[in-house]
Image (tube, rainbow, N blue to C red; front, side, top):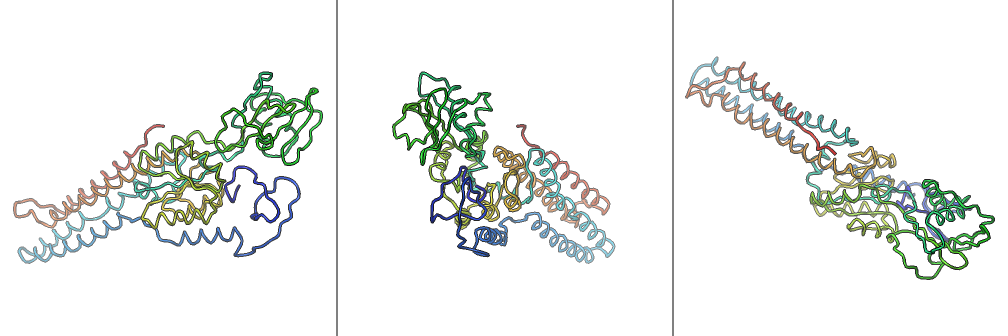
Length: 450
């Protein structure tokens, strides 16, 4: 699961390929090593991450560009003022206008316009469980076209759980069926068995004591309890149609008494509570959601249909990397959300990488943003933060630049013929006032209450 994103154990047979680092559920496993060193799975992932991180960012630092323009404009205007006022007046007058021009153009406001907003934004993000590692991600998020979402551990809990217990016989209640299910699976270390036992314990239902339990080869498990013979077998092994709603992508096991189905349990990877709302928010902002998962087609389709989104199943780390790369080549701004080793290369390659805080360290290191509470609903707060932060940045830049473009000509003496001039001291006051205005505007940045 760490490497592929599968939410449940996958059966492997002779000649099937397995990945170093995977966990063997039970029994003895003999493995032939076919790739070592640079050709190993982990090395390939590492190579993809390095390749992604070496690509230049598409974000442009507007503040640096504007500050550069301002520097050249201020110097040129000051030199012109020095020359013209020396000719039409005298050198002392020319020096006053030149000094005033340079003082009033001092880019304090422009230099603080972005850092003050970023500081405020980072603080607000932390209060909502958002760790911003790269502030350029905020600017790029406002331009996002697509959000690629991992499934297991991101949209879903990543834990194999009981999704539903169905009673198929009038002789039993749901509590009695749950007790039988937990009893027949008691003592097994299989994840499906553990999920059923944990489900019964969580509901405070006592497990039925079975006298004997045996494995049914290739089908399930059987045992005796209170003089009755029970089997818990797969839907395929039962072989008869059942009139019941099965959650999409779920694994179904049938509880049988004397060849009659008396109950069924559906197990699968459960959606996180905030996942549905996240998809609605993305669509509201005009961001296309796309699920890319290493899980199988059936499990992926089930989650995608519930959420109403497009999906790609059986995605390896390289597949996800190529998916993000292809969209970037179409000049789309891509956000990637994931939590596992298999997500790390695409997290690093995407314009904005968002890692789930409960994920792997390599995913956290590759991302621009970390959701410390591992809640996909926090992405909504991040998008709001990105939009409001970018808006404040633009406001400060407009003020910082606009103020200078108006003040510099006046400081250079453009309005002197009609009696309007500025001295160096008054120019310093205006320059300081512009800095205060930028600071106050930055502190007005707030997020809507949850």
